[in-house]
Length: 370
Ligand code: NDP
Ligand code: GDR
Image (cartoon, rainbow, N blue to C red; front, side):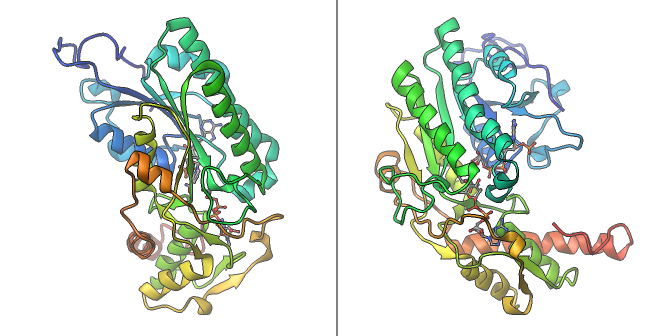
């Protein structure tokens, strides 16, 4: 699915005709196949951008979240989203695509983003999340030095996990106290980004985003794990849901709202770092209550606590203070907690109904669970 690209700076439209319009803005996104990458791509395409995504090789297709906006590159005049093979662990690929694509904006969303998994594969997590960000920043720096394209802007996907055990409310001035290899790696990426801004004058921003969810959320994050289970229990495909710590609190927003904040940061006069959050926090147990209650189920009848899902060190309480983003960017979330949970449950009930058709027809094993 990865494509050869046209040169977006050729001064002509993608169908080869000359155009009096200024050239489209060009964005380069790492992590385009992830939850945020898919929403950001839709958002930027709507704004008229040409979007280039770096995808990594996998033995199965990993483009499910963006298939609906993919246009075969053989219809090059229609395709404004293009995909290229690269990897945050491969510095040469990053520099090569920067030199070829000539982006105006670079969004670094790629990560081994699962906190619990980062305890299992800490070395790899650091390589992708910390050193990967450094590789991309260095590629941007050397690209600017070689081409003089110093208008290029860089977004780093930072995380509320960096605050770790520091009590809420957490803002841009709250000290970091990371509680996992993932969070420590995000802290390193944060400071690399600050350093490249200060040392080389690169327009680089850290978005410190609190948890954001959607029907496209990976199925092993707690919100989606719960809403998938609600759908499957409701349709009779599953009866139990195994979870870990139900007392952790998170500031959960909608991913579609949060990608707009990423873009807004790069439209400012000066680069800066911003907390993006709803300023509203709920426990995992409260999420369970809303999700199960919405379809008339009692979560206590189905949830089983499994020690396997507890982490060596937990982040107990995250609740953001997004005053700077509200004041400077004019950003505010549109989707609240209950609306978010219901949106995810609605989609997962529909998904479970489709699964049931396959199970009933003998094409799928009902025991298969995320
Ligand atoms: P996902 O896990 O859904 O997506 C991660 C993306 O990174 C995928 O496209 C994945 O590719 C890609 N990726 C992983 N490893 C590599 C690699 N070595 N080289 C290139 N690409 C790679 O994450 P989200 O969309 O939820 O999050 C986006 C970013 O924001 C991440 O950096 C995450 O850490 C950060 N973040 C997320 C928050 C959230 O609540 N969602 C909150 C704060 C920060 P593949 O599809 O092949 O696996
Ligand atoms: P988080 O999200 O660690 O906040 O990181 P996750 O949904 O994995 O966990 C949230 C809380 O739920 C508790 N929990 C469980 N978590 C999972 N995954 N599975 C379970 O069965 C389970 N039971 C209880 C966890 O202990 C935790 O307290 C997400 C990721 O998107 C990061 O990349 C991002 O940086 C942060 O959000 C902000």
